[in-house]
Amino acid sequence: MGSNLKNSAADSAEEARPKVSSISNARGSKSLGPSVDQRVAEGKKLRDRVSRSSHAKWKPPAHRRDPLSVLKDSDHGRLPELLPIRYSRMLQSPFAFFRGAASVMASDLAGTPQTGLRVQTCGDCHLSNFGGYGSPERRLVFDINDFDETLPAPWEWDVKRLATSVVLAGRQAGLRDRFCSDAVQATIACYREHMREYARMTALNTWYSHLDAEVLVQEAKTDDDKKYWKRVEKSAKQQTSQHIFPRITQLVKGKRRIADRPPLMYHPRNYAKVDSHVRAMFHRYRLTLPDERRVILDRYQIVDIARKVVGVGSVGTRCAVMLLMATENDALFLQFKEALPSVLAPYAGKSRYQNQGERVVTGQRILQAASDVFLGWTRDDEGHDYYFRQLRDMKMSVDPMKLNKGELLEYVEVCGWALARAHARTGEPARIAGYLGKGDAFDVAIRKFAMAYADQTERDHRLLVKAVRAGHVKASASEAA
Image (cartoon, rainbow, N blue to C red; front, side):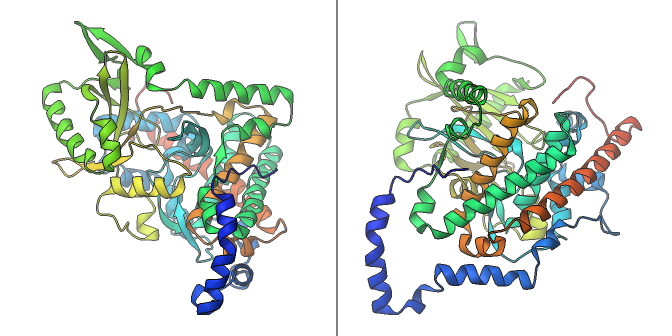
């Protein structure tokens, strides 16, 4: 896969390099730490302690916690009336179960080999948590797009979760295991190869790098695939407040309101109380934005608020959509969502942020090449933490189960690339690259792990199916993923 990185500051960064060298010579190179080559060598040395082949192993330990117990623990703090929807969505397939069971895999990953190198992880890294969105410059960029579980943690955890999702998505699409395992290896090879590139880039160039969503078109192997990705890109560019405004709102007694679509979108019965509660939250959220962003936000007024059920793993958390308007035809949709502690926290350490919404927002800003200008956080009067963002701003969602073989391979490789870019921004790319090496030893190991852990997920999914049938876990009969 060719490198199509866009580096807006590349020229200036290259010009600055001699100056950095002169400063280093004047003060002594030791003050700047090891060179890139030395860091690569240090990463390679880590193989003596944690071999790359050791990552291939997955065998449930004798003391492994019951996955349903882990899931029930993760229900703590969620709205109990929404939990049947959560479990109904997880019932749909092993991949759907996997999406809702980040806490289960976090518990399992804690016992797997680790190099000791940490990055700002996504925490819930799977194929459905990548996609396109609009940057502040109105580019359509491709990146990780979910950060509810983000936390500094071992880089291997994101890699293994992404790899397992490739297998489960492929199996759900009816693809053979040989193809699924080949797709995993292609994903990890792309991660490894691009990590080597980032290891040699300047810190600023790495930070400024991004993937335009058109990379999927550029990397397409056939004309049909190119046409498909162009359609996806075109559709995403239409996902703006102005385009979705007439589709998700309606006039009610002369006033513009968000359309009810129960049980997934609805107005609460005690609307007046909720409205007052949310307006107080909104005021506190506003204070977390930079002054220049408050200027544009202050042009809009809150017109309506509706509760929303989102995702699979997020079902049960408090989430709502706000309609704000500046004029009759100038709308802005904001979504605010409850932020619970990361599922990684028991194993990687608690967040340094007291507000879980701030944890999510900061993690997103660190990992993404460009982030929503309205990202912010708050806490309500009852002690629940939230983060705010725009709703569907040029959102490009890709359903991996609907891709043909060629499209899926192109997609998973770009996901591997995007993850490498995110980890390189926040960790030590030279040491990670040194550990990974030039060969495919790590790729093959993760291929084996992903197949074994996908089998484990299928066994765990069957446990949930049995528990629902036995009445031990309640699932909504009418809700589908």
